[in-house]
Image 1 (cartoon, rainbow, N blue to C red):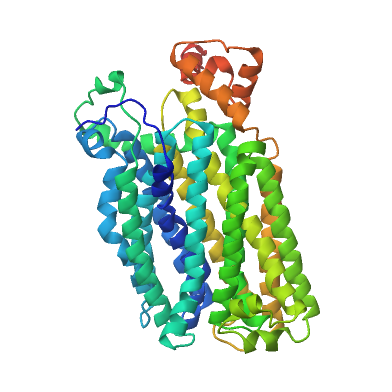
Image 2 (image 1 turned 180 degrees about the horizontal axis):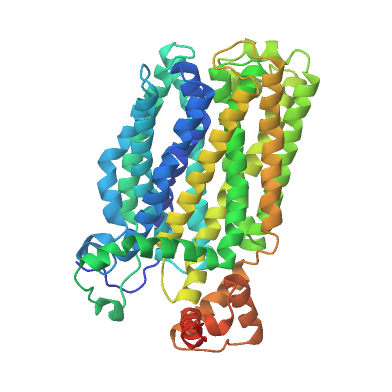
Length: 538
C-alpha cells in the first residue's frame, strides 16, 4: 500500500524503537573503537601499524558507499520500492540477516587479509543500515522538542550499548573462568551481532517515513536510460558537496568532529594507558570503561534538557570543559603515581566495582578511579548527544535553501565524514604509538612508549575539542531560531519571496548562509542567469 496519510503523532514507543537502532550505531563503534585495536595487537599477532591500516583502509570504500547509500535512499521515493516498502526501510530489511557477520572480525588465527576483508564487509552492511535509519527521526516530525526527544532516546540507547560493550568482557571472563582470553571477544561479538538484527527489526516495525502529499503522488519518474544511469555518480557527488554550502552544516561538522575524533583518540589510548600506567589487565580495562559509560548515560539525560533550554553550543562547551578536566587528572595520575594504587587495583581486579561500592578501597584509590572517569563520562555523553540532536534539524534548514527534503544525503555525508576522520584518527594513533616505541604484547613498555601514550591520551583530545569549539563559536541554532525557520519554510513553500519580518529574515540567512532572495532554489537560478548573461571572451 502506498504510504499516504496525514502526519502521525510520535509517542514514547516511537522514540525508543527508533532510538534502539543506535544499539547498532553506537554499540558497534564502542566495540570497534574500544576493543578492536587492542584485540588485533594482543591476540592476532598484528603490529600497531597493521591494526591501524585495517581500521583505516575501509574508509576508501566508504568514500563511495556512504554517499551512494544516502543518494539512492533519497531518490527511491518515487519508485515502486519507495512507495510500497519504503525508501529507507528497504535497506534495513536487506541488512537484518547480514548483521551477525560482526562476530567474524573477532576470530583469531588469521592474517592481515582476513581481518581487513571482514572489517570492510561489516562496514558496508553497517552503513547500509545507519544512513537510512538516521533519516527517520527527521522524517517523522518537524517539532523541535520531539526531535530532541528522538535524539535523547538514541543517545541513551547508545550509552547503554557502550556500557554493555565494556561490561560484557568482564561478565564472560567471570562466567567462563578464563582470563584475558580471545574467546571473550568472540562471544561478545556474537551476542552483539544477534542484538543488532533484533533492534533493526524493531526500528522497521515502529517507525514510518514522511507521508506523501497529493502533489507527490502525482509524480511519475521517467524510465531509466543509459544517460540517467551515467549521471548517477555526478548527481551523487554534486549533492554531497552541496551540503557544505549550508553554513549551519559546516558549523555542525566542527562540533561533530571535535567531539567524536577526540573520543576516537582517547578510546584507542585508554586501554593502553591502563595496561602501561595503571598496570591493569583486560578485566580492569573492561570495568573502568563500564564506570565511564555509566556516567555517559547520566550525562545524556542532562544534555537533553540543556539542548532544549540553552541550545547545543552551550552544551558542547560545558562538555569539553569536563573532558579537559578529566584529561588533566589522568596526566596528574601519571606524574604523581599515587602510592598503593596499583597493588589495590590488582587485589580487586575481579570485582573492582563491588570493592568501590563496599568501601573496601581507600579514599585515594577511589578518587583516582572514579573522579577522572566520572568527569570524562559526563563530558563524553554530551559530546555524543549534541551532534546528533543537531542533525535532526539540518534537513529543515536545507529545505529552506533547496526546496527539497534530503535527509539521506546529509546522513550519508555525516557517516562518510565520521568514518574517514575516525579511520584517520585511528591510523595516525596506531602509527604514532609504533613510532613512539610501543610494541604489541611487550611488558614492560619503554619510557618513550609510555610518554607517547600519555601525549595521545591527554594532549591530542584537548587540542581537537578546542578546535571544534572555536570553529562552532557562532552557531545559532536553538528552539527559538528553529521555530522561526519552520515558519519561513512554510511561507517559502507557499511562494513567499520576502521574510515575514526583518528579524526572521536575519535568522534564516544566518542559519543557511544564503540571502533570502536566493532561498528555495532561487540561488541556483540566479547563478545560471548570471552565467548566461555574462560577456564571453572571444
